[in-house]
Amino acid sequence: MILGRICGAVYSTINHPFYDNRRLLLIDRVDPAGQATGKYLIAVDSVGAGSGETVLIVDEGNSARQIVGDAKAPIRSIIVGIVDEVSVVPRKQKPGLEEHKHSS
Image (tube, rainbow, N blue to C red; front, side):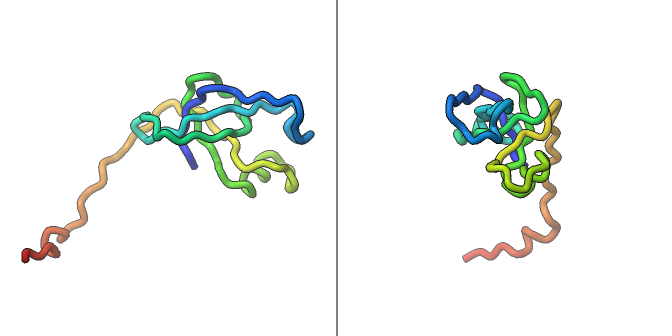
């Protein structure tokens, strides 16, 4: 799963019939803190996401095809949720890590 922020839409006059009446959105990938990573992707909107919203994306073809219910759909990425909040729990240092450091 990928976090991203909607930054635009993609329009085409010629496309595969699967994409008729489906919205393609341009998404900036973001880290858990909401900062852009410099990467982007294009995904089918399945939840009615809007510009500027943070979304959850599945970027794996078989999973995306299962969501749309079409085993032959030419799809890889699909928006599956609108994110209200991201909460990050800090990682705890594993006990004993300091013991394994060696000085030279």
